[in-house]
Image 1 (cartoon, rainbow, N blue to C red):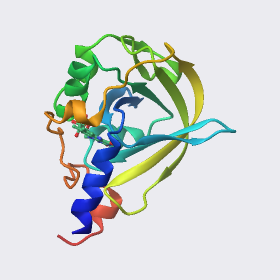
Image 2: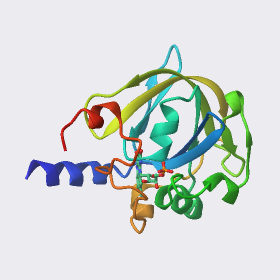
Image 3: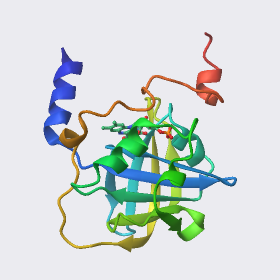
Image 4: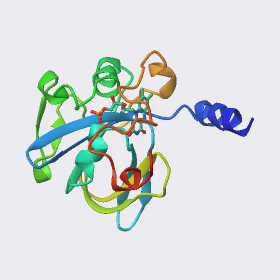
Length: 178
Ligand SMILES: Cc1cc2nc3c(=O)[nH]c(=O)nc-3n(C[C@H](O)[C@H](O)[C@H](O)COP(=O)(O)O)c2cc1C
């Protein structure tokens, strides 16, 4: 079945894991992501894909800035915090070291490899994740490092399944008869 082969092929790529954080309207949050990539050289742009199920997605709809933290091999507990809990129930930032960065976005101080983007576009292609692209306005790097990969976090169960639609529902979901 194509779906299974697709899953297996994507899994074989063993994507590096990242934590995206953001803030809007005095609220803050973030989640673990495997869907992220550089999307332009000039201007420098980075893109993340956020699940419509996530608290972080609903924040990103209103946010001006996002921080992307590239996790290193030793960051499994940070992956657990951001990948298995939801901002719908807890403030994850209360549980880890951070400071405010550009636009007030939370920056995880234990992650030296990170960047901040100023949002330029948000695209809902109709799938279960939404594309959020930004201009890279701030970069910190420790040089070469060993990334935490998908295969390192196979023990984690996502805080939200991609098909969930917690309230408030998106406009698209709200217009779909139940
Ligand atoms: C291995 C793994 C990869 C994930 N990749 C993504 C991703 O690319 N985009 C996304 O929005 N959520 C992704 N998630 C799910 C969220 O990290 C998870 O549901 C989180 O608890 C949502 O938190 P929130 O509701 O506070 O935003 C992933 C989870 C895991 C365990």
